Length: 274
Image (cartoon, rainbow, N blue to C red; front, side):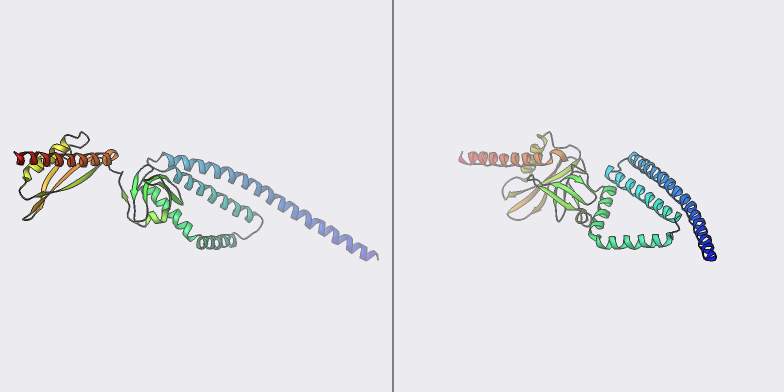
């Protein structure tokens, strides 16, 4: 009986010593983990702020893209800190990284379409084929750009409708930007019937565009005979106007041209009657 009691006491003392050793060991690990978490959190916040400020100083760099990349920096640092904390408790970091890689692959496959839109949004923000306020046209969408996001682009159509286009549909197709350059060319085609003076028609066209102050002098307006046949000749007029008032200018020039032809027809009729 005395020997059994002695064995129990000895076993209890050994268990207490082992528990004390484990407590001391893990207390240091817990303290080290807390220190790593605090330092990592502060470092992630500072790196996010510095990366955002650095990217924002780059001329033409989009703010949405700067926030996106700075957020990635923050989360990458936090993940590394978490792996280091788990390593403090004896967890194999290689297996953790392998699990994270497998999880990232699974999420990437599940969100393939979404990631494609994000990648397209990043390319649109970096290369800038269009900006907010510009009028664009693709095979799928036409309108004025309201906002460029990481997933989709918001547009306003010419008839005042709201349109949301996934970025992947804008990145994989040719884009026509009507607002990128400060000026645009307009071309008018006039048919001159047989018996009418081509020179007079060309002079009339030049007088119309010269009388409109919105028509640019550089490049200068030009008119030329594009084609001719036994019955008629085709005369073309080309001129340039600023992009912001191009539509109004072309409509007014076309209207003035129609009025000039009507007046010319009346004058010709009066001379024939005499």
